[in-house]
Image 1: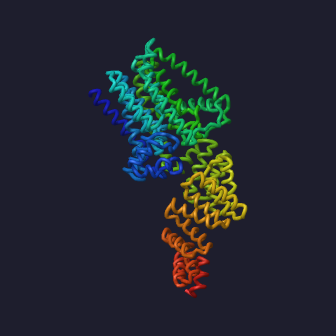
Image 2 (image 1 turned 45 degrees about the vertical axis):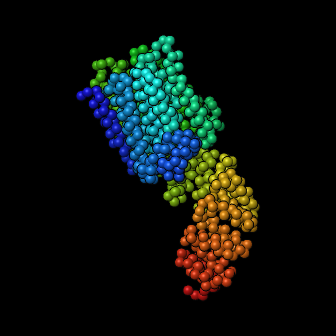
Length: 627
């Protein structure tokens, strides 16, 4: 068997193994309440597929607190192909991961000449349980897509090193730029090229560092540009957490790095979310983590005398973690499985080349057997870990089982139960979330919504108000509080509600909900002319808006503008033929115009929808006699 045939066979085998382990994701749902709504299920730009306007949006938006146009285009293409079938979106992620595993093997085999060790590294990458998050979460398409360009860019760079030419350099730079446009995780790529100069390329010799750095300066310029764009997008999107002290972030970074090392070697207790300790991290823990990392770095430096791959692999692990280790805190997590997608390569390289160098040739058979057993064990664990990603409730219940103090998991389970109309169970998880982190504004807001659905308006008001206290710019909480105050019903509440909703409408003029509820508040205060303008605006922003049309008719009726009110009620009935109140109200204005026979027809239509409707029964009896 030639080397080319062997490499193709191994690459195909790796891809097949990925499909065997992660192909189950084709049966999974979207995580509709955990970022997938941002990327797909509530994103009309993406759902429209590949269109000229969508492409323009992808390259100009900071939606999702990131600038990654190629990721948006990838999701658009999926919608073009699969619509909103979640399995198709998952399948694309699995196929991309399979391609990454196969290409990583080809890259390492050609760069090092060692098929067996390269296959081990690629297999550990492909089948490790830590991969489940990147592969099985639609929102993490950016991981698998950007890494495809990472591997391709590295292949192009090695081609440039073998036969230097401007065209080959430009190809590597272009692939690097495309990777940055899928996810800015690639900002460390030029630094990893310096590691490759040390091993396996062997270009790092005394006095050559300056030359090696200078040849990569255009690539470093792309890194700087991407870092600036990313920080701006994440800051504008509110993803950067600035309130945590630098010391706290540094301590967590040390502990997280040590934890990633532990999870790679012994992957247990993996979860979709790990709560950030904020100020609760014991000093001994960060000190122990720092000591461990220092010791391992010293050992890697010493091992480099015999095998440079050990040092390169260790530095690869540490270096590629830098953008996601939390020194600039993005999000509320202390760490995340997805952040190991590329850094994990380094640890696998250090083991694949370091252990044979340490054990010698006589232990080769034992190492092959141990490596094979390890890969099989990882694949089994990866299949189990992937199964937890089938839907939101399953995923976050698993997180609750393997972590402590996980308020985000409680909140996510509550949201899933809330959506499934399992209100009592949802309430318990909202309360558990708030008990752990009383300052989590989203839990207060969503619990307020749940209480509102149950008609517990005074309790809902307290939670909406608390959410707004915690996050003064929380638009949804402002609207929710205004809505709840209107339901409580006193005059002072109506005035406060009107102020809140006027501000909300000013903050987001394109919100039909804010316009509608502002109209309700104005009507409650007797300002019916002003209310009609808000209802008109709501129907323009979200046509057809049956509730706004019905309330618009109510305000017009109170102004004794009978024909205009009739027109609005008829429009409400056309928008929602089962809107019983609009039918009754239409009948009432027809009575005011002396058209009693027509009114009785509407009362009968209302009773056909709701035979027990008290007002419809009373009016039918009053104007039409017994039925």
